[in-house]
Length: 93
Image (cartoon, helix red, strand yellow):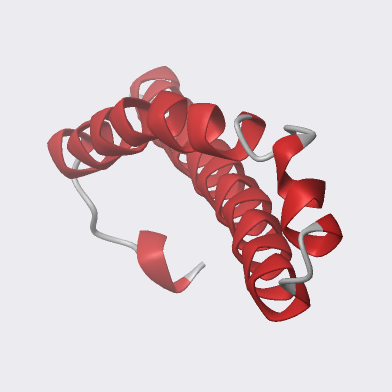
């Protein structure tokens, strides 16, 4: 987890999580909008090159959405671990 190396503060992790949560709906909407039948019309219209580029771009949006979700999960895990380690330290006192 190179993004979440030791020493990250709660504020840093929470700020990163807010950024990820803010972009997620935008990327999700863009990815979902790629599921339209009109995409196939490029191929039917004799524009197979544009169709192929559009399909690759659509697949890229889904991959980016997967990356956003993965990053969100990592941030959640890092915050949970930070909470757990804080509770562990307090319990030892």
